[in-house]
Image (tube, rainbow, N blue to C red):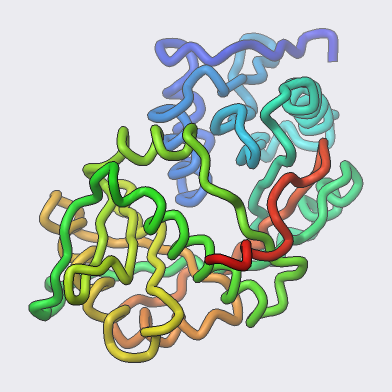
Length: 294
């Protein structure tokens, strides 16, 4: 272990080695590319005898920090993963904004699950990774437009309520509601090109977010679900991703969520199942139930 160094990521030195490590491991490669694009300062690499053999990525110091650890197969069981998780724990637990860390583990990867359990993580929920390839989808005449700053409160409310109710339905308990805040509002307007709202009679009833080739978020107001609006909105967002040059569209759907049938009917196919694990550093500040006036 005396030849092991944990250092900040330097693209010119480390990128080729990390991408080679992740060859054939699409999900980890996507996570790494997203981290590099959005928060490269949160990436650390392990160099062993001058060779890049592992990495840690954290997607920002915020309430829920997504954490990824990957160790090249031939260097496992050498304490490298333990050293990286200790590094992550130190960084996250000392940051005032961070309440918890989350990470994903492929279903069937028992050694990784046992490692995470040993280090204080537990499974919060499981999620299918699905993908669609093919022609654009038929679109309806539903009114959909890009997000504007004045949309924030209703965008936030629809998203939080829809996910709160879905979590209750599939048994992810306790289910939480996170109040609106100015930090989130600022991040939404900065990302407005990737955010969309669906309207009926000039009222926002659905919200969606895309991230590269991924349909990363979609919520329809619970009062109008199961009326075809979700299908229309998903079709628009899939086509928008394709209009931007992507040929394959990806999404994640929580195990037990009835929306999986909708995605399957639109041509999405299940690729894999991941477990999402959580470790708390501070008490959760979200409301356990939505405010009564929502």
